Image 1: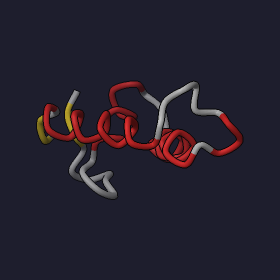
Image 2 (image 1 turned 60 degrees about the vertical axis):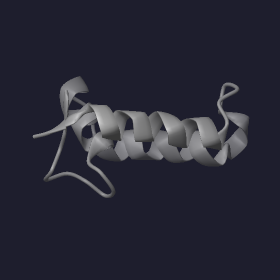
Image 3 (image 1 turned 180 degrees about the vertical axis):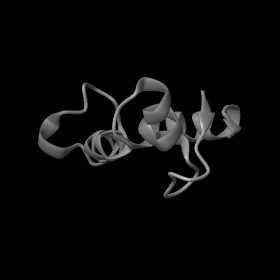
Length: 65
């Protein structure tokens, strides 16, 4: 799994994960926003700060494609 240099908004993390899972990067970005902003209480106990930390960990550990 690598970051996607062609399908990115910030660091290409969600684009790379979407490519590895064979799904839409837009879907993953939407899920990320739901978790980050806690829309409708659908965060499953994950705070926005934890969501951001998880994203940053992926950004630091995944290589570029």
